[in-house]
Length: 594
Image (cartoon, rainbow, N blue to C red; front, top):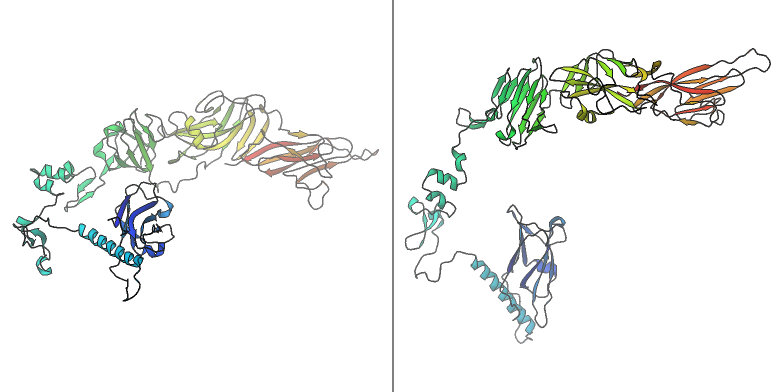
């Protein structure tokens, strides 16, 4: 005989590694993998306990099969390998795969009378019968059986369907199978035995895993609705006076009229997930301030630093209740939809340098923001570069030949605003250097230090337009990045002229003055925003700006004198220039991209 194993199935536990699973039981000889798959049932149970039968095939959700060849002289092969990697990955820990041989209970071997009896055919038929016997043995091993020591004559047959419908399977006093419904004979599962055996209700609740929660009082959100239903309730709490909030305020909808302060105890005196809703009513005359313990912080804020919420703001506030806890503030959408864009203003905007270190700054009502809240404010004061903080430089020391952004900054607690200079071009970069109490800002202008000192260049700004002011501050004359003969006006050959340090990189345009200064001879110059323009006399692609003059030999009737022409070019440069004489370009000013 060749069937040397007694198994017809095997189960493997997933380990996040294995994809090939061998089986040690015999299979009918002479089968291809496709034929052999008809005699295998592969069952996969995932980590959630869901069972599925895997079919044979080449897909990544199917299993592949290889069968061990019979070892001569045996005609029946022993074992093989099932490969299964769902989606290309090994089955995970907590899952199982079971490989089982299931043969049809048929007999297909025919031995005609007086024919040749082939030993291999006979042996294969006997092997098949043996494998069927193993299959039956595996089935009977999985059923409920009475022990061999039971007395003879006991009844193990179920009552008919009408007698056992809606009844329990039970055993009478002698051990006979019966259908029972009487409480006296209803069986108790092992899982429920500790509950039934508990001597008190408290112990029974503990056995069920409910513990004290089963009898805890409702409230703080979970409340009886008066109709016998437990519901999550959001109690409305109206406040017009400062208060300290406790765990009793959990899930409350606090409607507050500012200006008041809501003080939070240390976060670890609450519980993880503690939170409430806050609405600062629009009719408030000031913001609501949230004050926190020195050991805690508002998300991404400094330890002990509170925050404020302007009238019309709605916010969800919660905490992780850690020993150095974090408070989370989430603005509820819908309250700032109609807010004006940050930096928009009503009334004129003017920033004028008045000396080497000072500038006046005025604007009508302007919209500032902290990223969540929007405020309308009218700032006071001006700029003094000799100071650090509000009204001066935000941090550090001034550098030479540098553009500084001018911001309006706002303190919601004091409802005041002023100006500040900074290298920061975004609120995120400015925020860490804001003076204490200032939480919101809007970018409105720019100032510049001189090429060789930290004195302010003389500039005047109206709206987004800025012009250099000769004779003010460190500005002696208009910036002159190039003069004299350069390139060719006839080829043409253009000279690229950098405007770095004269026009900020975020300018949307600049004003360029083209000038030539000669009193004799023929001279010409031209300027353009790019080198794509033609020569000075081009009839099809002339330069945007050009000047030319002449002196009639010997006549003296046409005398040249300095002349200028001005144009506006988009961007921040470079400019392009060519001249055959004493021309030059000057930068009158620029427009900011605010």
